[in-house]
Image 1 (cartoon, helix red, strand yellow):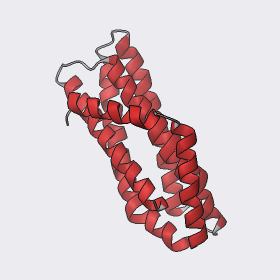
Image 2 (cartoon, one colour):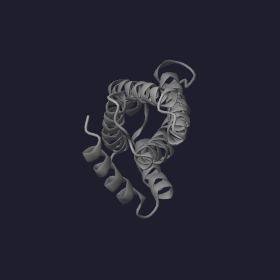
Image 3 (cartoon, one colour):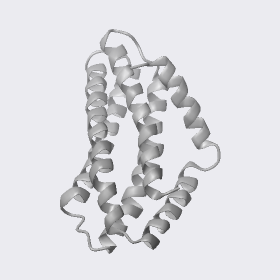
Length: 185
């Protein structure tokens, strides 16, 4: 698989989880409840798959490859992507804090905070993925030589194996399917 196809496939999985978070927000906003374990599962998916696996491919391999090719990483599209990754981590951290408050019975401020952060996170990542696919990926394909692109693909496979290990991808597939059925958007 080409490195760019790998990253786009990751985007499709993250998009599915964003729909789940939107469904959770709608359910909470309408006065319904969302199981603690379901919120934990959605946030765990984002932490492990979205950040430690997908964003790590970009942060640890793609962006350094661009820097090696002479692309400035402190300005332009690369700097924007780096900042969006950081903002996404902050949003997930805030959702975790609000989820903890909700688990302690705070149906007011914590629930409102979770809804707000889930929506902000979803909006951020939707725009982020469009930006990467429309700008960053084509730019990187033009800047990186074939050997570097092949090395990226190999690095992505190894990182995913190291992060997800045996059975984790399958576990996330099951969790994602369950959450999509439970919280349709």
